[in-house]
Length: 335
Image (cartoon, one colour):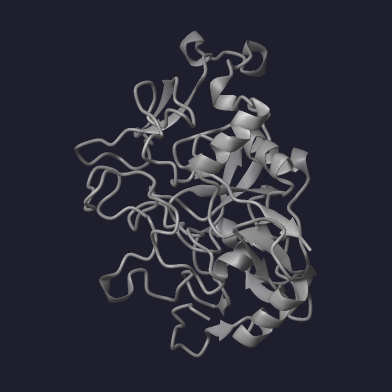
């Protein structure tokens, strides 16, 4: 494998290189260009050492599946739009009846765009987001911006419905949370990151995440934003950008923990799924009856001082109608 394996004893290979080749050979050519075969297996999903929603860690068994080697790009999404005429949610006017009490200026087509302050701010204020009319996948920063020169960047401003529409057109589906996490680990078990236990081994950036003090200090040579797919090293399964760059939609409904109780060591969950749709609605905001899906992988906005979710076990709840400049997706095909 090409993974940067940790030397710690608790790190294990999930599937050997010879086993991987055997499974690849048995299935033959990928069902679609740019897909990688993940042979499946048993792994420890979640984490007991990070954010509460990642708990409890538990044993999971996954069947083999094919997965896109990188997030869907602007070029790929543009082809989908050209062939179908599909209009994304960010390009549609929100219906007032779906958002009672919403300000009129927000009931226009648009999406959430990151606005970098030039001074430190309180991290509990989330003041760096703005709803920008006219922001969408074609205009990532709003009117006047474009994807020209960014054809190989991940497509962004994608709501869950948009990702699912693309997947159907492509003859694919969105991954389950368990599929996504198994693939992201790249054959490693027990490590904090997809490449080992060091965030930046030897000082090297292994993914597109925030460098500096979020949200005001950017220590990179380019502005905060997406980077071309496959710019950073692949994981042990040959997958790019499983960590950082953009958050990725899954098909699982979100619950704020993996299980009601930690299973016994003998219990292995077989191809687990999330909770029911209605259970995913946030009970803390009963006035907002919008279901939530699980996002995985973190984005270019994840930082060491805020949202350390650039890890395989990390997960985030997102309402299905939400689009933003750091949300994209990739697809799978089940064997």
